[in-house]
Image (cartoon, rainbow, N blue to C red):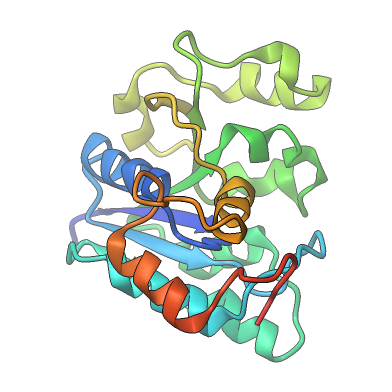
Length: 219
């Protein structure tokens, strides 16, 4: 059986914006992924207030056209049963010795990675792909000491090393993007132009459903 390269891209996607899609497309091509799976957060382990999951999935479906892109409701289904989303559990559910798993996360999230459940065990199941805004690799000054050591002991610079058996950390450079969900929501509140931030179908959906029209809205 041939091995498959599977990307796991978790996040709130609240809303899905153009930077998310740039990251997804670059990861798909750069790592020659057979599939990239978007995994919207269910019940946040950090008590983050999220828009209703049905809306977030609907918005994802508006922009995901490539057949290699898939959407998983794994964490959302768990949340409907009152269970908190822990990424390590999600990754374990996809773990298969015949596949190479690539978990994709942003640098800002990685700065608090030591607060995640079983964070040191991630490399037992997948590679960690850190999306970085710097041109020269990790900015170690922004990382806690235990995460710095974690990177130093496990980082590789050559992506070909990711196709060996041992899981590693790889820094994928992306062009600088200023898009943040919180700022996009504020622009919606201010009735500002969103064409640089969101797909037109997502903009239309947000207006039709009157999403983010009130600060802190979650329905």
